[in-house]
Amino acid sequence: MTKTSRRTALAGLSAGLLAMTALTGAAFAQSINLTYLIPSGADGVAVAEELVKSFEAANPDINIDIETRPGGSEGDNLVKTRLATGTMADVFRYNSGSLFQAINPQQFLVDLTNEPWQADVQASFKQVVTAPDGTVRGAPMGAAMGGGIYYNRDIYEELGLSVPTTWAEFMANNEKIKAAGKVAVIQTYGDTWTSQLFVLADYFNVSAKDPNFASRYTANEAKFATDAAALRGFEKLQESFEAGFFNEDFGAAKYDDGIRMISAGEGAHYPMLTFATTAIAATYPENIANVGFFAQPGDDAALNGLTVWMPDGLYIPQTTANMDAAKKFVAFVASVEGCDAQTRAGGASGPYLVNGCTLPADVPPAVTDMLPYFAEGGQNGPALEFLSPIKGPALEQITVEVGSGIRPAADGAALYDEDVRKQAQQLGLPGW
Image (cartoon, rainbow, N blue to C red; front, side, top):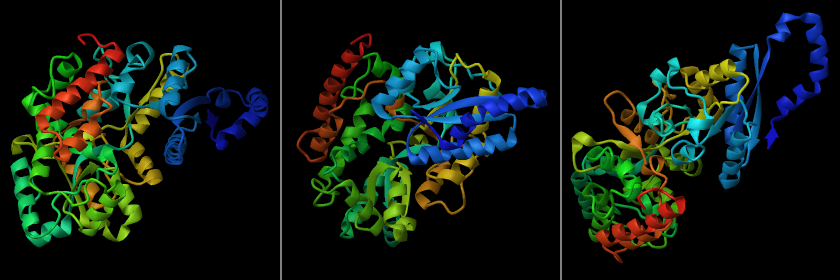
């Protein structure tokens, strides 16, 4: 774990500051030092430094030391250890969803339910930082990411197509694209993880039909193979393959091929997570304006909405000695000023989950296309992995088989139900 260099200098001055405190009295005596723990990585550090810089400018009596930690399982273990030993920083950034639940938030984190700024935090985010006792323990840190379908805007304009809000409309568009001699749906099974999108991005449609699916699924009371709404993701993959909509080299093409094809108009649709927008902008900047995005359609236009991969949360441990200052910093991050600071440091990759936060006018169309799902009257909800700790490791192999015509959708869903059973039992979940 490391601290940023701007803070190291403070340590060297500590002796001098102590002496000056004795001479100058109340002004220095009121100064507060907070610690802020974040995952390592250049992008994350740059955002944290801009947030701290902006916050300190508005709050000159509070100084913040930034600490970094490893990512992955090593970082998970470090966070759990520091919480358990009472040595956690005053504020820390960590995952929302199932990993948030794994750090025992009810025991270790401060209840932020009644903080005034929570009124502007979108309900879909609160859902993934709510402890088992129903209290909200976190604030959003970063932008949301969507799971859905990129589309080539030039092809849509050339063929006179409209963005679909139902699966039937999507399939009708695909028929017209295929009839025009173009690739309707890009698939890239050379990177097997990309095959999962038709299933994972369909979760908003599942929850729209059954808001309690995630809890029933976790309790072994709902299955992909036997729940008609959950099975649809596998069926959509099978239907797309059987209709002959895929690129000829779908079994060997890779993610990098996919972002090239969708941006250059070599294909009309590419199911994917919106983190690819940044990659397209960096690799094919001349084509970024050609790429739009929409949610994976369901069967009912009235229930059209976006499956969202939620950003991290900011949390305060129960052990902090600087509660008021820590809450003040978290409130700043969950404000319009906090969103603006994040955009200045890291650009705009997606919508923030704080009402009133806006994005620059020059963001790529694929980012702009996400905004209506987060605006008043729009609909979005967390991906299943943020609501349940169960995600089978074999899903990407199963979806490759379904998407290649090797295995029917129903068999694939049943096989996935068995895959997650092993994980649920390893986690010791009741009912398995």
